[in-house]
Amino acid sequence: MIAQQQLERLVTRAALAPSVHNVQPARWRRDGAGLVLLCDTGDGLATGDPAGRDAGLSCGAALEAMVLALSAEGIGAEVALTQRGLKPGHGLVEVAMLRLVEGAAEQGLHRQLERRFTWRGAFRDGTPELFGWDRSDARLVLDRKGRVFLAEANDAASLAMLQDRAFRRELLHWMRLSDRHPRAGIDGMDRAALQLGRAEALAAPLVFGPLWPLLNATGLTRKVTAETAATVSAPVIALFHRPAEEDAVTSGRAYLRMCLEAASLGFAGWPMAAIGDHRPTAEAVCARFGIGPERRLVQAIRFGKPTAEAPPRARRPVSELLLG
Image (cartoon, rainbow, N blue to C red; front, side):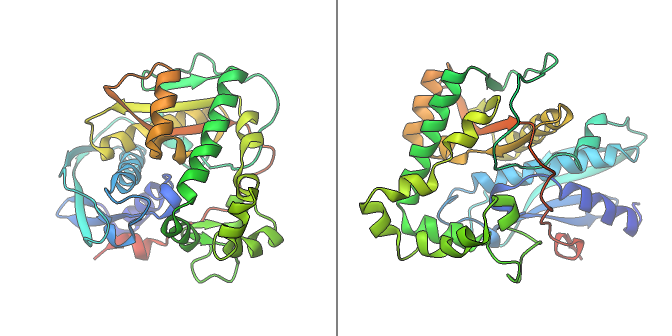
């Protein structure tokens, strides 16, 4: 039986996993001598993730983080997935059962949990030192021509998706543009993580709200949403792809390991979700980079060495993550 203090430490480390919009839907509950991972679909992205795939990806990353954290304490985990749907608005849904086993070997990748972070800004100049890093489920794009293609694809896909008013409203809901926001430092995307100045943060609700139609008509929305410079500055863009029929939780487990491997090289990353979420763009990118129809483009993420220290993490307290 895991002691309460030890369990809280494990849950805290598992919460270091990335999640879409930093929603952090993963919840934990004891089950005898084991653990249950649940997804709080009440915090789902009804517009951006109606099928619950992003929720599954996020929960899968948290699951793998827990497995790694357990290994650091000599505990193994036999994982059984429930394969249940995670569409928004269905309350707490069980995702996985973990049967704990004593005497497991430590997985060194757990040391990167605290080192991994997201970085929206530009990256340092220089040739990336990959030391042979490669993955069968990630197409690493290093050449400038390919990175420019992806930068332009990301900007176009983002702008296309932002035309949906409900999508913009949901995005704003998860932004913490003021330090006085009641959830600032807890969840969502805060001003520091988004690397927005105070003036930009003040303007964001207007730009994505009532001013959008006017700015869109004058072509200014393309300028205010563009990330081409930051994207091209990334020496590596990873196109993370998994079997087309694979469940999102399993994909999320692999996604975390990729991000931690990148962190071990000193890289921070920023996901460019629009590339995978906007179907015409995803199809064009897969065709351009030789990703076959039997694979799903789960995420495109730009990697590089950041130009400054990591911004403060926004994480839910254990009291929200560990259920009675």
